Length: 160
Image 1 (cartoon, rainbow, N blue to C red):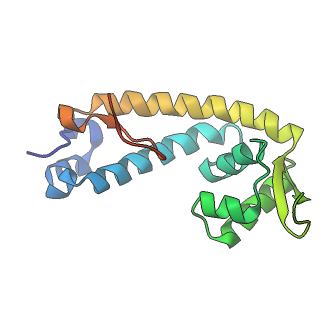
Image 2: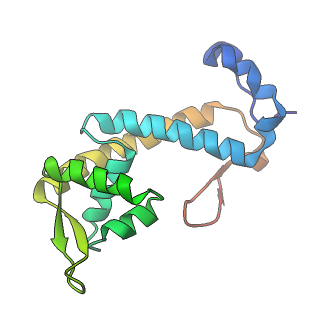
Image 3: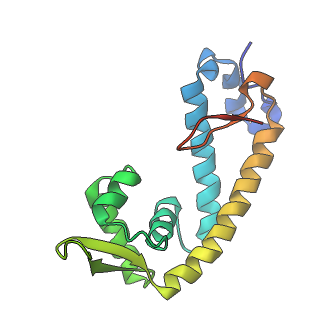
């Protein structure tokens, strides 16, 4: 019996694939959940001109932690060249700024500008709305009780 049972008429031609054995693989299901979440987040964030990655950078830049480019790349699991491009784009838009580090002036820290903080507030609202849509869509799928859980990125799975 597959873990995910979906109504084929609602999800289109690929729905019949939900009976495949891979649908019992937790890693696969988590990847699918992440993909759906990314699509929904990016749709919601589009209204404020951000995507998931740029939203994450602005949020971390606005955290008061003054992250370095290297820390951002590592934390977000991005290649250093990807984080440089993201920061360049956000800096050009006036949402973040680079500044010499307080401990080591050769290292650049990333902080949000006032405009970045305003955009971040709108983005947070958009992200919360996307989360609600994600929850709504997730609860419409029928999963066995043992598979109903939330996954926290930095903690243990929590039953719902």
